[in-house]
Image (tube, rainbow, N blue to C red):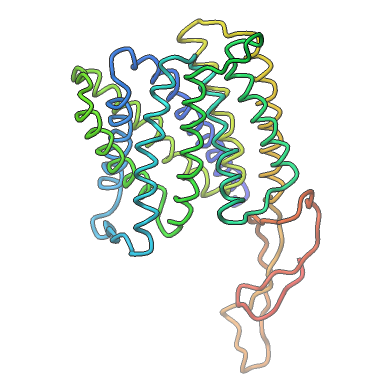
Length: 355
């Protein structure tokens, strides 16, 4: 029965991961659609406010009253929170200005450049190692991004909209490295903080720059998109991660840009340039390398623990030893390490028990 329950949980978790990817994929095409009625700064503001306020509502109504504890921002967290909020004002603003002159399908794929930016910034600032597969993925994403940004081979001129989206992805790459410093915060905490903080910041900028205030209906639609594409997407991602682990969840989530391409075709019916298809193939190959790099360091394996049964009377000299069989996620630093033998600490923490 426990094995059936475990299989059911994994199946549900896989579904949650795909739902998270699909919800996030709605962002590009529907943002592009709404930009006809909402100015870029207001768009960025209401997207983030929708995510932040929506997640705040989920947290408030979905958390028992006794567990609604809000921990204050610690002193060492403040610089990273400030950086996160400022970058989350800059990045979506750049994205919205870029989206106005770029196909939503191109933008969906270009958003993958965030992986490149995140990895290279982590390498430079935090000395994080980059595996061979990840390097290959980075090169392929970069090549695809160059192709998707070209307006034509004859003049070798880059699209302004595409360059703005790449700049947005770079800002998000830096923001990801700031966010990792808030490891004591839950995903919901982070979405609420940056959703409300960055949303209000973008809203102030929109009023200062005197953008046209959108109609109430479009404001609500934009906030709903932010809640669904950012807030609910994160919510399902966290649900999936509880049973799949971070590596496999992020691997499933990697389909989001390609779902974004499909949604864009369905909504706009616009055929992209020939270079798009080459970029799509390169991006798909890059995604494969990134997924295999991610999954190679984490897998599930079964093993047993030997534990002293609580009914034992050790004073009688007759301890009862019981074997417990179960499986869990196990992370490895080396690549291609699938089959292995190793020791685990027993649940009592006393000595290793062979698997």
